[in-house]
Image (cartoon, rainbow, N blue to C red; front, side, top):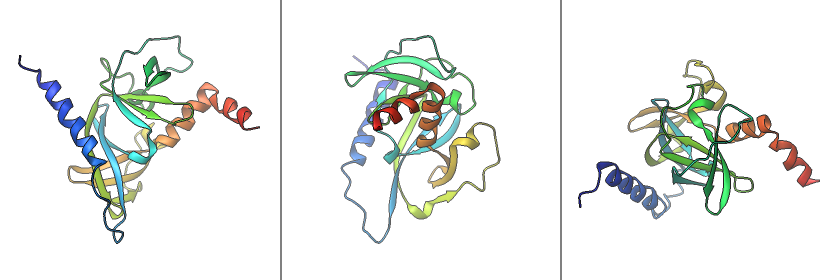
Length: 184
């Protein structure tokens, strides 16, 4: 039975992602950063791999009454219930059409997921390929969450600050109060 083209593409991307963890560390003479390249709202972006707890193919998301318009609902991921937020909406593109294909998990303690449509690749870039965001024109919400650029083989990509997005979501939904109460 012939597999749909999307299945072989997903298998290829999964293999590339898995193999990126099997690579030998680069020499100490050149510091590197691992990134994921993704598409959000039809635009290219990158994410630091160190800022996420994992990535999964989108699963069933159960809608719930939203405390914020970016909340898509809840999903069962890795044995837990995780709130799922629309990355396109957070970045100011509005609701993404259709169901998202990918979720990145953020924060290990109280995980949340960010949904997006296009996963492209895992890259290992030298630190010298990263630059401050002085070159990007202000384009709305993205400016709040992008403070660096990555020069990749496919061109320059804005790097989304996952910690800033997580902090904003926690602030909007009141999770920051729970975390502070648990620390005292």
